[in-house]
Image (tube, rainbow, N blue to C red):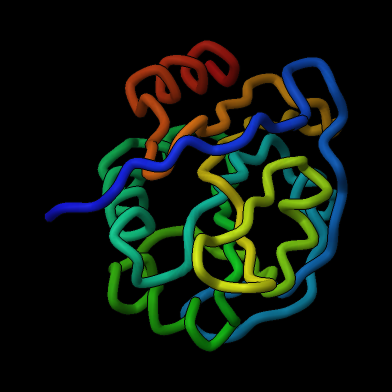
Length: 173
């Protein structure tokens, strides 16, 4: 598969030690969706917030396949994704990727407002007025403080999954 690697502009994203911006968006599973806030998820403990490209794109498919292969279920951790895809697209993606058998859920943010609040929104080449979040992961503890962040500097890019797993193991062990 061939694709161009695109350098992304510098971002102004929150980093470890900073509070994660709160938001409310539709949170989708394989059966339904409902407006849910990040802070409501944090009431149950730490959250791994994963920003990804629109559903069906190779990077999103690869990312969620890799995350499913990791043993995040062994931790008291909620793993949620966020992209510009609609709740309907998320429901289809969840079924296609086998996420229905996991605890993973996906936030829908079609206008990329959450990505903007995190400083990671970027405009898609050749699509006037269309933006999405750059790939990013934030491990957020129960009080809303970011303990780990990774944000892509180019597209496509993926987090170092082994590093992410090590951080989660260290932070939540």
